[in-house]
Image 1 (tube, one colour):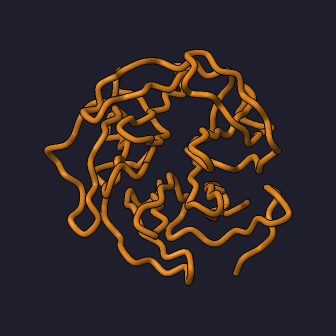
Image 2 (cartoon, rainbow, N blue to C red; image 1 turned 90 degrees about the vertical axis):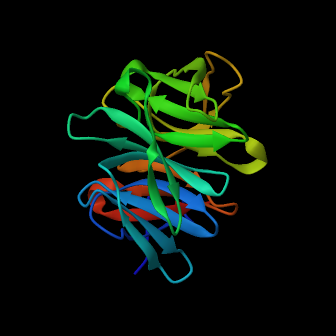
Length: 216
């Protein structure tokens, strides 16, 4: 059952498909969610909140985004080194696509046209990658980050936090600049992790509450 959350008056939350849901992506009309406890990803039909597909990941999913008709997924293996994988719905993860993230670190993902944006929170930066996952340029983050994604009119949005990743705020970041400023829109729940837009509303994981929330 949905419940009202703190993101905004029009926000609701539903149970995750598994515990500690994270990260999120939206592809072909389905909301994709990972789980840190099952090391799997799930395709959810948001209309009836039914799981349509459930696939084991090669490791723990840390970031995910739609890229064309596929997903790109950041996966942490047993040594916590991070790798990028292609995932094709109906076919699964492509082992041959495995590419090490720069410096073996990375988490949140977003994609715009032919560019994938990889968050490296420990380095306080986002890397713009080409289709082959090679770095094109670096974008310095002005704050810590709990998720980002492209939204209305192609603008880039981010969840910003303080050094303890608390007092989270939802706002915009101009990734065309190398050192952009964060522009706050509204506070957001301190449990929020990951951010994706489905064309009408935003989704985020309330990871430690085992829920996925949507807001407008």
